[in-house]
Image 1: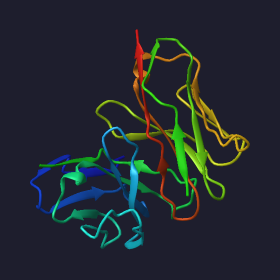
Image 2: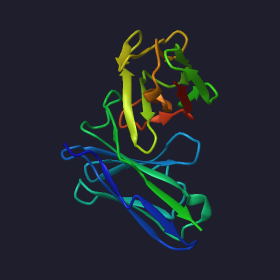
Image 3: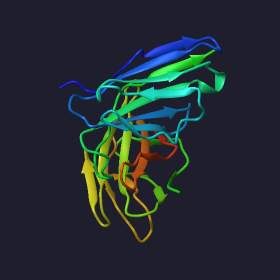
Image 4: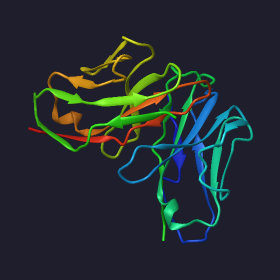
Amino acid sequence: GAGVSQSPRYKVAKRGQDVALRCDPISGHVSLFWYQQALGQGPEFLTYFQNEAQLDKSGLPSDRFFAERPEGSVSTLKIQRTQQEDSAVYLCASSFGSGETWDTQYFGPGTRLTVL
Amino acid sequence: GNSVTQMEGPVTLSEEAFLTINCTYTATGYPSLFWYVQYPGEGLQLLLKATKADDKGSNKGFEATYRKETTSFHLEKGSVQVSDSAVYFCALRSGANSKLTFGKGITLSVRP
């Protein structure tokens, strides 16, 4: 079946521009996570949704970052007034359960954001 | 807080060599432990997992045992192949509604 998809795969933005990154999770998956992966590093948590509810946004680095999942399926991560330090790969993951520790997260291919 | 420490890389091995990649962790509660792999040009994939102490996860010839006494989850494979060349990430989850906490990852290159 279809896995997690993300679009666009690559995005180049000028500093100060707003960007929107889309994630389509696996159908029926309750939980959705966003991670940020800097070059040469492991992914770092940004935010977590259970259905349409954003239960944890403790990893969002600033108020320029905003995420939503209005119908409990597709999610959008928005970054306002992009800065060079926002350049990274943004990963989306979904899982079937409601956040249990043993529940496997399935990752999308990521969106590589480059801010010039 | 939770953290994962992986051995420094990169690692280069000859085909059929034995592989060990070290991973230790710090966590509150009772974490589940994971190894993810990222092949060139592809996304992160779950390689194996273990959800309680002394569990052994295994897949594609790779194994890792959850050692609570040493807070470790080392990845091993008896005979690596060129196709195993990838970046390997150790990760944990602890607590309800919990995110994954990843190590920095290690690049493995296997030469023919």
